[in-house]
Image (tube, rainbow, N blue to C red; front, side, top):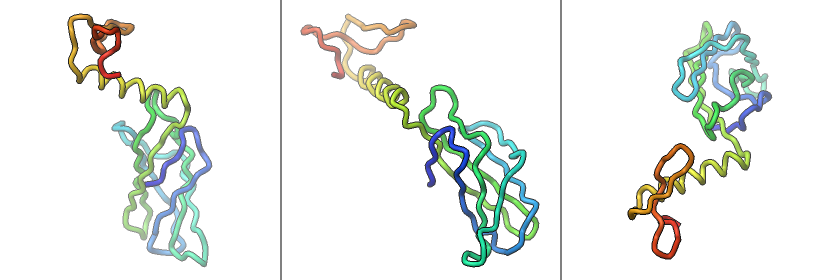
Length: 142
């Protein structure tokens, strides 16, 4: 599956149109469990004579991750007269260090909550329990 960094709007995906000279493409997209939406102006181009029947779709709409997400699955359903429907999938991702830190924090949280917790519970902002403090002062899960 093709991985594209969030905010990138100049990448293309390729698909086999099974016929040459197609036009009038409709592209419907869905991302991260949201309702499907039709692309407003899909840019679909036939690659050329060296790759007959192969088309590219410019990915230039809805290419920013949702707040707090570091990866999302996205699907494109492509139709045109004279071609069976095509399905193309990508993964949007973020490589920003803040997002990587957020993933590590979530992983650490799971490690804390899955371990043994004594009566000295450590609280985070909002009051969520993340784990216990051992007799030596170390957090469980470290």
